[in-house]
Length: 363
Ligand SMILES: Nc1ncnc2c1ncn2[C@@H]1O[C@H](COP(=O)(O)OP(=O)(O)OP(=O)(O)O)[C@@H](O)[C@H]1O
Ligand code: SF4
Ligand SMILES: [Mg+2]
Image 1 (spheres, rainbow, N blue to C red):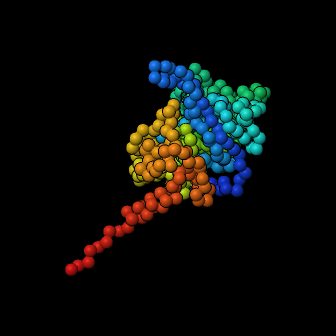
Image 2: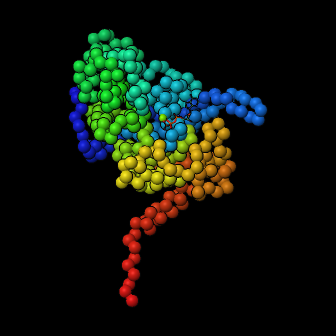
Image 3: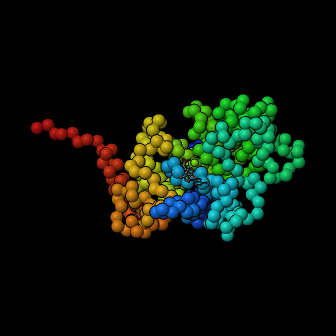
């Protein structure tokens, strides 16, 4: 592996994913946990779906973005796909072969899916040396020791850190260096798919863009496929080929990045995008989104469309029956009964706002 160079404009250099074969297929995936819930005077354990009915696919070489408010289930999805927290039901296929089916993992992943965690501070063991941290991900491959050593060094070089980092502890590294070590750990087994859980949110702005550029360089160099969670609308817009919008544990909209951002179909996506004037970089963090109302309780989710208590367009049907994801435009899906009318209305409103004010004629 050679060292990645710095990049400026990734969009023009990135190969198109559309013609690539499907790498990851997820169908009807759910992850439930037992929580204590009170009902009247009684407390009982209740099974709660943190994510449910998750169906989507990612193509080889694609950058697939996932956005949504805090608590919507984005990390739960990545943990389920990497089998760190096994799913409850559904099917997951990698490269055409099932890796999870009928309630249990099928075979071994052997490093083919790797995850970069949100917070390098807590995801790197401070008592371990960098060489052991990176070698961790190779354990499942049972490689001979010299092969492990050479893969650790080459992975570190690939992320711009040299062999002089091998003996350092995580506590001796800066935030950016820690996240580079996390990326080296993910790269070492030569995975097919890398799950990135807000990989830059804990970093300052300059380091953020260095790490994002590094990720894009690596993708081109090694034909990597990314499933990328971000709170940052402009990061999603810039990097993602396709985007899935999460709300209360389910996907409400899926589409090509450009189409989702310029012409969103679901009222929730519209609210998210409206909350972030793209020109203002300080207002692009979804964690700070000023969206009216609270996300629903996962223990007692609303009946019908789970967005209806916060939706200004809600009708009777929305309160009784959950809408399914439907293709409204080419490759652009939304789970809303009135997606077309609402998005057209929204588009008209936007055009009216952008029209120059009429100059009154002189009397
Ligand atoms: N093991 C668990 N037991 C009970 N509830 C859980 C468990 N893990 C996660 N949750 C809950 O599931 C919901 C989804 O959590 P998750 O971490 O996936 O959200 P997220 O979209 O990644 O949020 P953020 O953007 O803040 O990282 C949250 O309400 C969280 O409190
Ligand atoms: S289905 Fe109804 S409540 Fe749900 S987003 Fe669409 S209009 Fe709003
Ligand atoms: Mg998360």
